[in-house]
Image 1 (cartoon, each protein chain N blue to C red):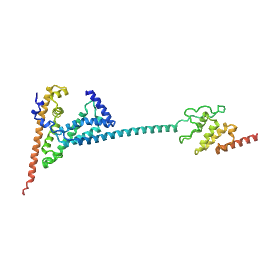
Image 2 (tube, one colour; image 1 turned 30 degrees about the vertical axis):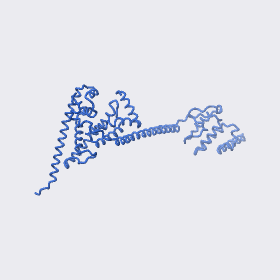
Image 3 (cartoon, rainbow over the protein chains, first blue to last red; image 1 turned 180 degrees about the vertical axis):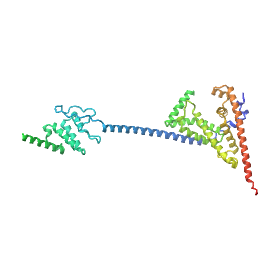
Length: 191
Length: 210
């Protein structure tokens, strides 16, 4: 046995040994636990907050991207409806919008786009053009497009559709129908 | 518990604490509070008020920087001891600066103590703390294992993977070094105290008119 393992013979035991007892530190222990746990709790809240913020940021970024894409997506050049084509039986092509659908943004579809949509619409071509004209008529400063759509509608209209219908026709369509009727009657008279 | 199990367990607790799990933190805290407090108290020569300050600062540092704790490199308690050792060193520096300013005027700290311990005990504690801080790390470690943790030479040798002879030799050197440094620090302080007392005596005497 050496000096180290015999506490009674070790002069440093009195200085370095744990002879001072264990001081009462329950208050300090509890207070420190409360304080450090509070920091851990705060960290958890911050993590959750950051996660929610990140999710919200992703959602907003996605929504913004979709909005930009919707507003600026390229429009396929229109093909004017052919006289001999089947009347509105084709399904709408991908990437085109049905003119009868409500508009989702400030963007006004180009008339070529309207004509493309009409070519693939499920309703009759007259009806599709008429609806497009109605929509243009509701838009401010789109009167010329409304006139063009109604004109196209009257070009492809049957005799029954050419008749003025005060219940369904807008004032502009009625005026155009009346004008066409007059033109036709004048033409007949000239001949 | 094997070393691998200890590492895995502390890794899980660390990750959970980082994720904000209060129970994980409380588990780490409960296991290490008393050993850490005992270590700090020992390093500060038994001065409880100073130990309270250091332990408080140590835990606040630990909870804010627990991400830096790497269980692969050592136990959580060892990591805390590392923080505490730095804080003890800073504390002793502050005390030394304070004393260097205070000694010329009044010869040392005031007679009252914040924790009610006699002034002589506090002075002795301060000398122990200074001496331990001056020792090389390995010598401090063997003294800690022997006197604070109460391990025998054989146990220390097993834990450190050394021969008892080598540990005994290291312990002897550490003791000698401690005694020498302790006596030197105590003597220097007594001399400084005597000089300050002499200055105070001179100041008390009425000035003679030329």
